Amino acid sequence: MTAIANDLIELRQRIPSFDISDPFGGSREEYEATAAEIRTALFRLLDKLESERHK
Picture 1 (cartoon, rainbow, N blue to C red):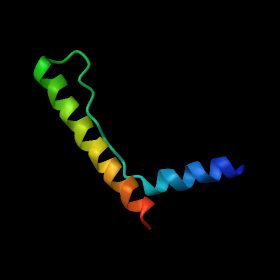
Picture 2: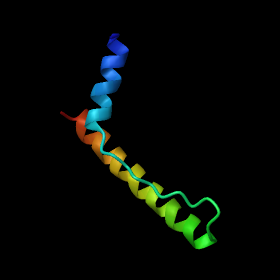
Picture 3: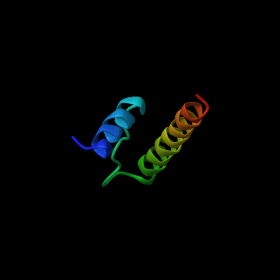
């Protein structure tokens, strides 16, 4: 396995899993709820990356 592949595996293990709903074909409210989920997940990811950076 290459160094890049090993780095990707390590990164995948450190980043929390984000399960985002799929609003395809749904109402406007469902799309807005999914947008809120994405925003929350992005902020969680940024917090995680920031904490990893300071280790």
